[in-house]
Length: 146
Length: 146
Image (cartoon, rainbow over all chains, first blue to last red; front, top):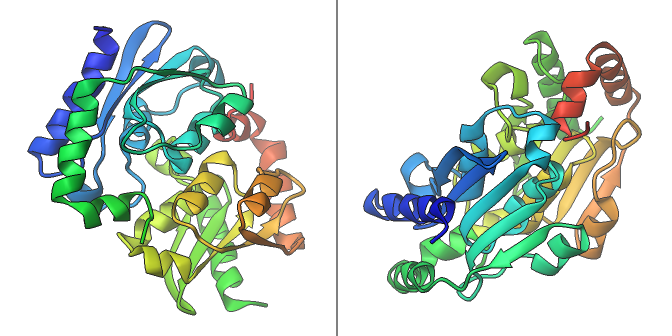
């Protein structure tokens, strides 16, 4: 398995162990792991720290050139917020664990020039299936669904 | 002047006094001020705390119903990240101070059903014009431009 994707899965599992939403992310810049992150809605009472956002925040202030030479890994298809952030920084490629339990604006991302790789990873699907079944209201809050 | 928009301007001015990027925001839920925020790139070394993001984080975890009864105020046209966040939470209306010094994906927001009110506020334009002239590189970093 791609070792950077493995980092994203480890982050998702870490979030689950903390009692949080099991979504993880990793940012690779110039071929090297720059940062890792996971969803912090529960842990920090955060409305904005989705896994990808936490990962990008952990990376700190990067230059536009660094973002353009990066790959964002995430265990789940990025939502409107996280997709918008990738567009802001012109991150050219996102590797996505799965898009079966939730799908963000993938066609819009592609239209704006972002390369998406969908892995259809069984472990990611299982993590989300189990979580959504156990905590449907928390999951709906995370994606703004009534 | 709309008192909630005045809050957003005060936040922008506060950011400027802190040595930061002068963009401010306010979130109104059910007709009442819920939170306020400003850009924290400089102050916290943050890649994600644009004014709107800081404001939404300060609001804490809201219910989908609360977001649907909210208005987001911002002194500057929201970028891809902040626009995406409004879409995630289905915030129905954004009041924007100005879109002359920078313009986010406004047509996309409208297409997705968000009402935008552009105020063309002279104070907001002046704040950004002065800041961009003094700190062009910092401004480019904030909006991902090389």
